[in-house]
Image 1 (cartoon, rainbow, N blue to C red):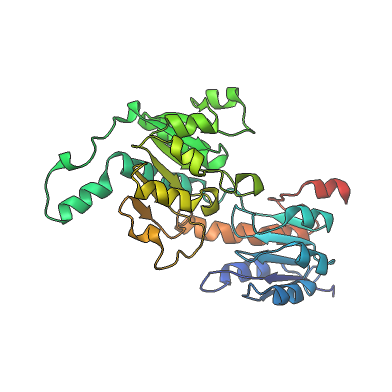
Image 2: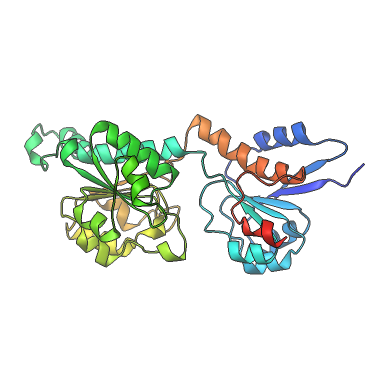
Length: 331
């Protein structure tokens, strides 16, 4: 009998790991046995110890930095539950000959729906109307008059799978859509009925801005005080990507001074958001608990695809969602 391929789930937030266990049972054979363990820790020393004893690890929020990667030279793969990979030092992983994989397509409709719902709720003033009516008022004129959809501009920061799907939905309703993405050309966007724009154009022209760029070194605080001050006083910003893409202090200051109309935030710089955080008390802010990805289908898909990255590797295949493809050339 062959030695088992060892997988450790470093951290997760599921009630159990039955989905993962069922797939391991399905693909584990006498010739190629697979063993699954669960650590459930974000402690660096515990991660290092678990990774030393593993061929592959699966993470959710645990930080896998250069120190960890250099301490576990036999680790072959890090697979993440989710799209964002900012918690893994991918460059260090490549140097250490460790593959990194994610699940980059499990919640395209869910997140684009959440962003669309946020934009439309802001556009139609649903939160303000609800609050006024619940407080005993009955006067639509107490909130700023809404724009008709085909007169409003939506600015998308990023034009990957999720914002591209969001653009389809927005265009079907009648919105004008601008998008910033240095990696997508003008003709591609034009073919989708989307106008390619700079960050400055997005910030200045948009009535609603939706954030979809990944969190990397170059996008940390991409939207700072300067960019927020470019926004219309009637504009809203929606963030379903990562909290640190927006400078939260600058955003709070703009909201407190009524420089912008409001924000719909599914993500924040610190998560969970502290109970006394100022964002919780601002009436112009709608908060959701990093839930834009969540649905019956997405809940299963994120888990199945994260574990399948590892199972594929154990079978001698390239993981379907491999990120650091350069490793294939160097190895």
